[in-house]
Image 1 (cartoon, rainbow, N blue to C red):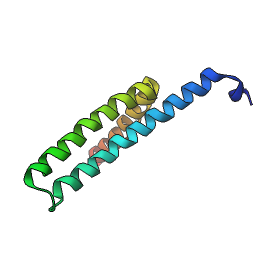
Image 2: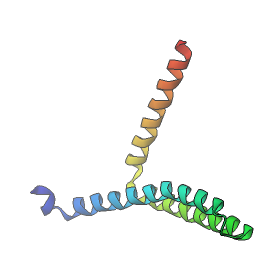
Image 3: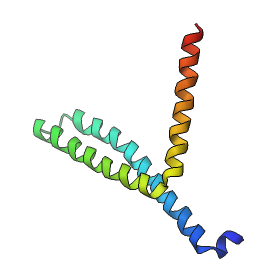
Image 4: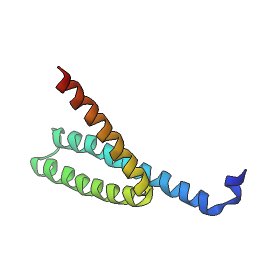
Length: 95
């Protein structure tokens, strides 16, 4: 019940949640770009322009997501991927 009494904490959690949503939307944009680029019902010009616009929108999602999610979350994600990368490199070196 302490969470409900602290509006700053609620705002911070809501801000981070929205930032994570923006980062997920960025990830989903790449699938949309592939679908638009491979859609045969679109003209060649449209197959170039629409994915390019989605790509630009995905960068907006990334910037907003990183800003809202906070540097702590981004640092944890980076730390996780470094851990995974090191784990795979160690296995390849062991062989």
